[in-house]
Image (cartoon, rainbow, N blue to C red; front, side, top):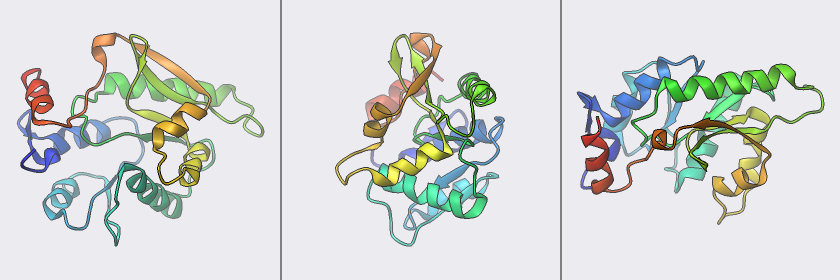
Length: 192
């Protein structure tokens, strides 16, 4: 990309500003972002927001390792209950909106209210855009513990495939693309 993608311009600020604004203005209780120790500019940008910025001693090698760092911090700091909801999503999705977050959270809360909390594991809640699942994923805290058991070559998608799932349907054109290439960034930016 030539420069850190989360610090690229977006809607008058940066990609990370847009993402963190959306999450902090949602009904989510706590937002955690894992930032590499070497990424001082990104850490400073994140620290402007009411979020917990976690910087591990050793930079994570991949997204799974970043997730594990953030989840370990959450577990030690907040000690969530097994059925507490936990969104997992990449940070390079600037088009995330409350119109997606809130229905997923409401659906999960409905499942939680109906569940036998002593015996029933809650399913993973995913948005589905015209038949295709997407981001963000909403796990129970209990289910996030299974990430640590994934093999070295297994990513989060492996666990998502294994867990029982429920979907919240959205229009196909509401699917949230992430930014992996300069072309994707330019295409998304034209849409803002």
